[in-house]
Image 1 (cartoon, rainbow, N blue to C red):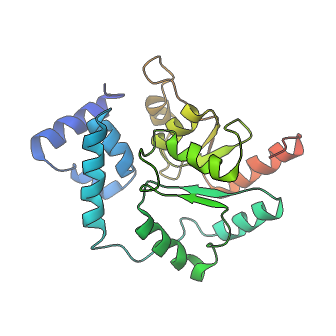
Image 2: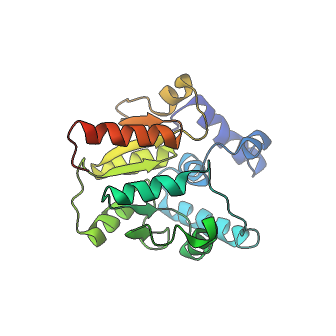
Amino acid sequence: MCKTSEDARLVEYVSKHLKLHPRIKRERKISRTDIFEILFGNDEDAKHTAHEAFNRAYRRHYGEVHAFEGGELALLRELNEFDVTIGILTNREREFFEHELAKLDDGAWCDLFAVTICGDDSTRRKPNPEPIYKALEVLKEPADLACWYLGDSSTDVIAAKRAGITSVLFNGAGWDHEWLEKIFPGTAEHPHKPDAIVDTFAEFRWLFEECLSIGHDR
């Protein structure tokens, strides 16, 4: 079941033309996982096939990597100074992830994470909560609200809420309030909404420090 009329038009366009609309490719505001969720819904076999096809194409083009905003490395180091355990969950394959992580800031990110879970490390990808459970199992931590998941897509939000942890949406695509209400309607069919939304990493730092100041232990 499509969440929005825009989702329905995407399904119709791809079914007719067997490719994404040029506007979607140009704007690059929606993740491939979100696209696969819209197109294939609960068909896990179809999504697996789509991810495999993506990997074959991506393998020919990946390599150059840049931080999203700049300043992320300082934030990660600050979180480590606060004794916060940090991990990465990604639907990207490990062969791509490790190569790209090593290129960021000349490899300075590599030792900052206690756990990394990639798309090929679990049998199901986000929005299934399995990758989150796998990461928490490695860390020997419970799936509760003391665990925050900062993600930039509706897929991340859904995975976090299904796992029973705190969901913080990083609105890096710059979606306006009206669109956020569309993709997180809070209905019976689509109940999952983020617990907080930040537009920049500076806002996330403020949110984190504010929660520390009022007595949150993580």
